[in-house]
Amino acid sequence: MCIRDRKRSEDAKSVTKYNQQFRSLKEIFVDNKELNKRFLDFQVNKDPNCEKEVFHGLIEWHLQDYFNAQKNEEEQKAGAEVRHDGSSLAEIKKKQLITLIETYKDRYDKKHVLMLLEMYQVSEGVRILCE
Image 1 (spheres, rainbow, N blue to C red):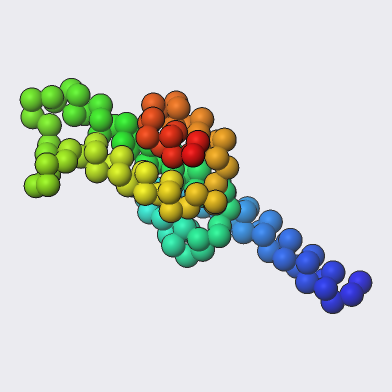
Image 2 (tube, rainbow, N blue to C red; image 1 turned 120 degrees about the vertical axis):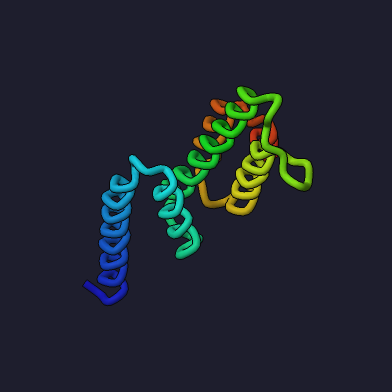
């Protein structure tokens, strides 16, 4: 085995070990959404070239957060929380989601994210992915 083949083999083992560690750590945070988000943010900030699974989890977290904010505002229509710039909490969450999608456009599976956006009915995100 030449040095180059040995290096490839070591790299493949390293990636496999990273994936196993990521999955086991991810399971720890399943029940705590805020810690899960912080963990996924940490992964992306640490390595912007990390696995697609990290981006899928982070995008889904933002989608759920946006959906919950939107649902809460609909339930409390009269008393919806409005920021000093006139935007609602749901609008802010949507902007964060769209920024994430635009910033890391090449780091996730577009079909997977498109399905999530359609499921949560975020038409602006669907439009961005289809451009």
